[in-house]
Amino acid sequence: QVQLQESGPGLVKPSQTLSLTCTVSGGSISSGSYYWSWIRQPAGKGLEWIGRIYTSGSTNYNPSLKSRVTISVDTSKNQFSLKLSSVTAADTAVYYCARDHFLLGNWFDPWGQGTLVTVSS
Amino acid sequence: EIVMTQSPATLSVSPGERATLSCRASQSVSSNLAWYQQKPGQAPRLLIYGASTRATGIPARFSGSGSGTEFTLTISSLQSEDFAVYYCQQYNNWPTFGGGTKVEIK
Image 1: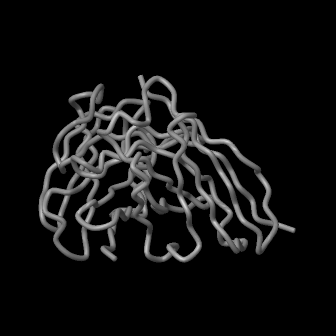
Image 2: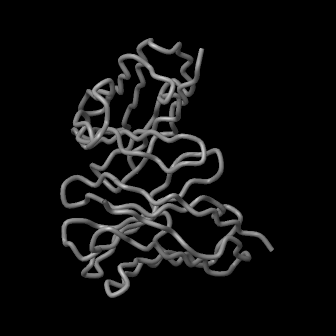
Image 3: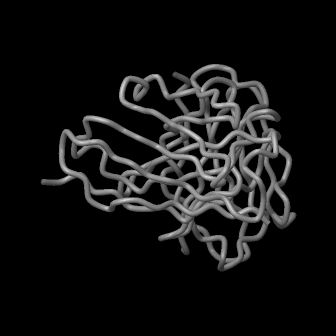
């Protein structure tokens, strides 16, 4: 079955750019049936959708983050990536990647295990 | 933004009892609602989509109902592995999540 795994630096300095990659295994990211999303969760808090990408490169972003977010896809590596610029302590969170059933109804399944990113100098 | 409000924040239930969790949307989301379970240190797991359709492999003791602005997740007989935090998520517009309900052992 499809599995997702996040990777990237666990510590980012304020004002810098957070960069994460999600590697998809057990299936092709280009299957055409799904979008691929990033979601985050600050410690002890709820979930916030960041944005999604289709294999064509088409993207949608959370309006509250849109000015700072870029999501890209590399089908040759079966990966998609997140860049979040000008980070502050408020961006400290566990970041998840997930398969997004957008073509059917936009729920998320499965999810990666998550990776903690701390913004601190 | 569609705001999702879950209640109660914490629900204390004895094993074997029924648990009823509520989720309210700030405007109608039709049946475009999903439920997730999250255990400590783990990613959320999809339980329900389309307000009432169980995801693959989800036990029948989990059921979802509702439409419009009012939704309910019912766990008919709580098992030890069901104590967790539950989130609702609407997808009628760009996705937003509720604040969660923690189901704890009474």
